[in-house]
Amino acid sequence: MAKDVPPAADVAVVIVDYNAGEYLTRCVDSVLAAAEDMTLDVVVVDNDSDDGSARAAKSAHPEIRLIETGENRGFAAGVNVGIRATGAPFVFVLNPDAEISAGTLAGFTKIAVDRPRAGAIGPLVRNPDGTIYASGRVVPSLGTAVGHAFLGPFLPGNRWSRAYRMEGWDRVSEREVDWISGSAMLLRRAALDQVGLLDERFFLYAEDVDLFARLRQGGWSILFTPELEVTHEGGVSTGRSRRMHIEHSRSVYRYFEKHHAHGRRRLLLPFAWLVLRVRAEVVSFRDLMMGRVRR
Image (tube, rainbow, N blue to C red; front, side, top):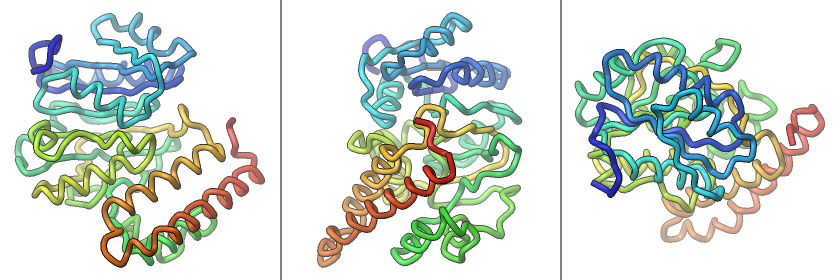
């Protein structure tokens, strides 16, 4: 156990904050309310916010721990800081603009205890309007990925996006999947000890998909369960901007290069980079025209 890590709680909760404002305190409120009789080690890792959000959450809840990194190293690096600072057998990673809205952490963690080969478990995620976000998806084929990437932002009902999002499944039942949303995920420390923590080369986006790929390769399963529900605002720390779309393209490219560009497929790398950058510019222009750009 690393130096200064407190005695292991039942569950460590890691929240990476970057200018999340009042959402962060509400996030922590919901976590503590969902604890029931479980002992939690709640750690907020602040990536150099300038809005006072982390210290406001700490003031509201002195029992949580606050780690200030002093720089914005990205989401994956922030999560790793929190994981290394904790010793619990399970780590619940939650975005600062997400709140537990139904269920308990005790019930959620019991799912992990009862399914010892589940390396990561995702809850049901709702959008702010109450609709279900399609967490729990397949890793798409190259053709499906391209179809979804270009048509999804404009025609979300296209067949490639429907296949990728596993539409037709109502998400009221437990199911093994390839991918769950990184906005809310329960990670088994034993699985992380085997495959490693999040890859910090992913500054933002796709770090979860990369981790789940490594978990599956290591013999662990990825599980979705509606036992817990989370409402996720989305985009509070990042906003909608050209910079974020370009960052997304970089991360998807890195994932493709790491997991799929082997042998002759490496010849596709320049084409993949061009396609992803074009998509970033197209979606950025769409957001600008629709007035969706936050900053």
